[in-house]
Image 1 (cartoon, rainbow, N blue to C red):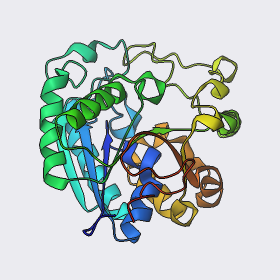
Image 2 (image 1 turned 120 degrees about the vertical axis):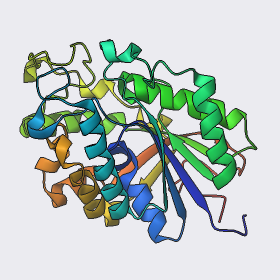
Image 3 (image 1 turned 180 degrees about the vertical axis):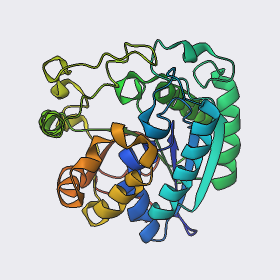
Image 4 (image 1 turned 180 degrees about the horizontal axis):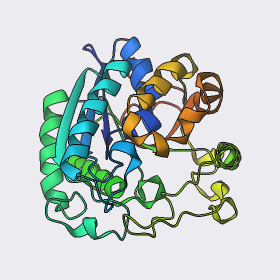
Length: 289
């Protein structure tokens, strides 16, 4: 048991990822007095520009997009009451296979040891009790998510042991339902396809969407189920703060009530632990307080 303020560090790839995957736990633990630290690895320059203009299309200014998304990230952090925001400011790499993967300064092209060294400095400074990031496949194969996992796990090897480390995930039992709701609201779940270059117009029809039941993990492999229902509205508002990406955030079409019904529990796999807390657990800080 620790005798100081507990600290949660979430390592994410882009502005808005903090709200999608961990908005509930960031808000919940902040309300419980936990110090929350968000590390955002990229500048989000491969996101949509004003009016939904896509990367590679006329009018898409990566520098302007990055500046806009930083403002939105700061607004999201205010909603979630994040204690400290740290920006690594690597260039957004875009989807797997895009030319931007290999551009100078892209996160995907950055040597893991470089990113890990920078993150290790932050870990030494904040001494988190819990670190959260993506799994080895970045949940759905996004290069920046994969790289965030790589530098996080490498950074943890360079620092004193962090008591608990988690990867975000989703229960397989719920993913088919997510797919049905996405179709209901006209979402295309384009990102896992990751096949087209910026500016290409083709988008998959509903019949071409991937089987949502193949994303995430079987329920029995999920170690940690955290109830964040009470913070569903705040998570929704944090996502809404990323207004420039609204076309890609299908959850915003649901309204807060239905959003909270679907997104009221955040799930994780515990991959490192020094506490011996029993599994399954319903608290990232089980065994620490």
